[in-house]
Image 1 (tube, helix red, strand yellow):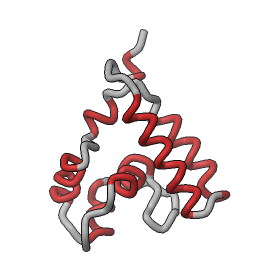
Image 2 (cartoon, helix red, strand yellow):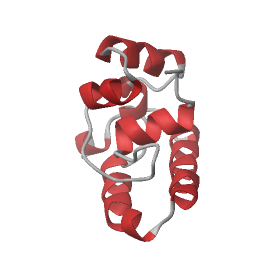
Image 3 (cartoon, helix red, strand yellow):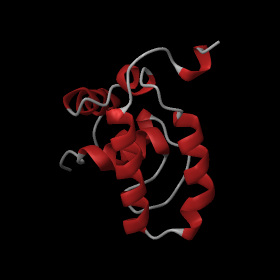
Image 4 (cartoon, one colour):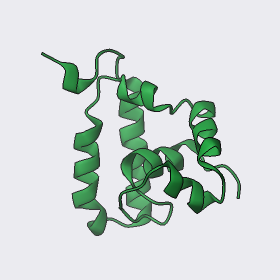
Length: 106
């Protein structure tokens, strides 16, 4: 299977939105199984697409809030709407300043 694009991989790995538009808990092993690759290959993809967990979590963005919102909204959205929302979240993260992780704030 070919490498997913940046939005698809971000949505699946970080937000739990599958390529089919379903929400659920996932980890690197589940993502790897879906694409029929190893977890190490998923981590390489994340690096190639500038989606490493360190980069994402070191942005001034509350990823947990976005995950919770999607968990509640996903059942009421079609796959196209979900992908659009994932694109918006990723754009917000890309635009966010780097810094301390939100849970480290005073």
